[in-house]
Length: 271
DNA sequence: AGGCGTACCTGAGGGC
DNA sequence: TGCCCTCAGGTACGCC
Image (cartoon, rainbow, N blue to C red):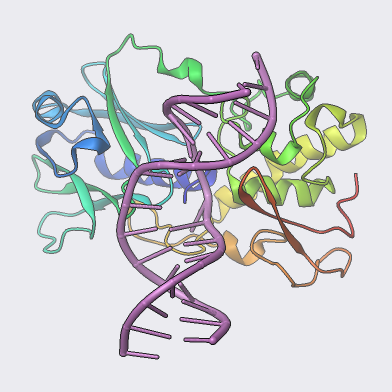
């Protein structure tokens, strides 16, 4: 489910809801979803105070007062839901339950069991594996051009590679390419200046607009309060197979790239 | 190094 | 109804 705008929305919600709270107990019911193994994990987080909550790529970063971090990756269907004290029903499919000393709690739930929660020591260099933040100063047009240089992979596949640019997923990769008028199968390294600049601008614009709408809820994405996003009403390409392109009037097509559905307009994504 | 296919899971929806 | 197929917002891994 969640890409950069959804993860950003969840992290902001968590920051408001759990910063300053102390973890009273942790219960892991699906061992493979946490690292280190459950009993170590549960013991380690008990008594920890939540210092801050942020985002890096698609990771939710929960900073603890000890200097350690709780990294959460939601993969396809993961959810982080905060429930106030006195809530009766646990979020369905809860696999990790953190209860705070004020009796509120955070459920890490996941139907498909792909999500992961990892406790990281202060000096562990996990950040090295994650690419540039597309909404940061660092993501200049020059940096983008350097990343693209020499790459033969289709631009759509390149945009999904988290080691280069962190945070785009299938929805926003499709939307950015549509907005820039770039064909998804185009070899990344063959894109020249004008199109490169349009794509750079489109990536930032689509992510900013999606954050403003609190993300895209096609099927089951909800934020930390269980609320849906609104960007699904503004999609121009993703999921619109057979519908009319809002720019040129031709039909949106669905093709496959790197085993992922890819929605685009052959009428106006020609470059 | 980089590109490609497969594996990991459950549930929803369509066709028959 | 029910069965069988395909599809899903993501990444890790092994192979060439």
